Amino acid sequence: MIRKPVSGKLRNKLILSLLFSFIVSAGIFLLLQFTAEDLMGDYFNKSTFMENQKNQAIAEFKEYVSDNRLALSDHEQLTKWVGKMEYVSVFLFKDHNLVYSSDREEAAAGDENYIINPVLKGIPLVPVAFADTNVQLYMECFFEYKYFSIISYVTLALSFICFICIMLFFINRKTSYIGVLENEIKILEGGNLDYPITVSGDDELSSLAQSINEMRKSFMERLNSEDRARLANSELVTAMSHDLRTPLTALVGYLDIIAYQKYGTEDNLNKYIHNSREKAYQIKTLSDQLFEYFTVFNTEEEDLALDTFDGMPLIDQLMDEQLLGLQNHGIQFEYLPCSAPFQIDINLLAVRRVFDNLFSNITKYAETSKPVIIKCSLANQWLWLDIQNHISPNLERVSGTGIGMKTCEKIIKNHKGTLAVTRTGDMYCVHIRLPVKESALSPPQLCN
Image (tube, rainbow, N blue to C red; front, side, top):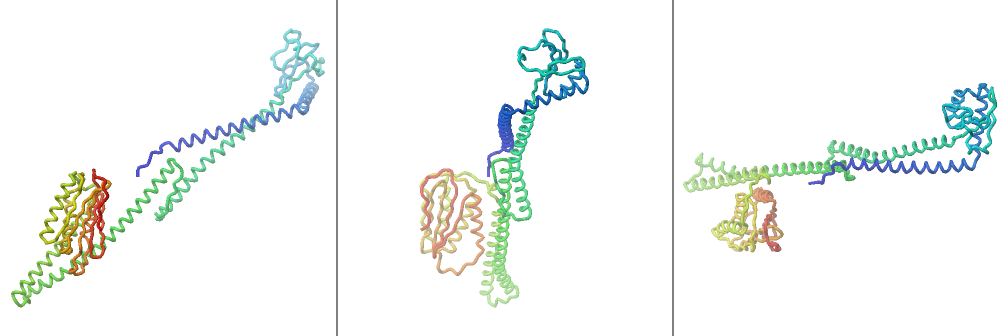
């Protein structure tokens, strides 16, 4: 069974899962970020929370200056406090001149660049008492950035957790499938080859499962084939032993009579010698059939050497050889040849062996007063051969191994064809079908 390659599908699915997880988690991050910022912004605008935070920071600054008895020139201590607070900027004014700014490394009183920004005019300033002087304080607070940063960290963590969960979902689907395959393979290891392997998806794992399933079926078929072959060989050996023992026992008896001169008259001696020859030839025929059977059954289709022939003259020639034998035995026949040319690949010796066996049976068992009918036809790139004859009513019941027909079936099977036998009353019919390269598409003619 030829399957399409699936190389890289599992990798592509993993990449798509990563992209999908990233896109979903990024969308969740943006949605949560914007929603939380909007809600928090509305809250800050509608409440006095930020104003309270600012008043608290101013109170802490004044307390810090008072407790540490700072002078206006203690810029390092002031900068240290601002750095500790993180989200504030401090501006100190004296007589409307900027004397300290936490946003600068130095302050120069009286410098025009440090004159209070006109934007601050009209904004109430807070008086602060230093150890050496009194100044006015303007404090800018950015506490909302603190909470916005917290929101960013929280939404980032949530989106990352979402990314991990989505990836785990996709990975879990594959790992759970691997677990299923592992359990099912263990069942096969236990000897239960009838248990089917689950095939799910369309990637390397499903391809592996399908391959294991096909291997399981092939192994089961091989075991069943070996069992059938073993049973068939056992039955064949049993039947051949019986068929060989009967003439062999008779042959030994005839030879004992001749050896011990118990035949009486000369006519009896000739009779025993004749019977001994008949039994010897019968044993030889059975042994030849057995040798032929094992030769054919040890030959596989790929080991059979095939040649291409023109079908019409070949079949006519093979039939002429066999029909001449029927004439010599006084058997009437009717031959209907093919009506269209074709080519066929066969092993001529093997196919001739089939016809020899079939027509040999006809000469033994056919009713001579009724014709043997051979029909040849073409249909759907197949050559159909149907041979029918009436069985002679004067024959004693024949019980044989059927080794000849088994050999014929195997030869035709090695040619990728079929051989079937039907019997209705005293009508015996053999149907042979062989593949051809060219044929007229006419319906096959079968036995009536």
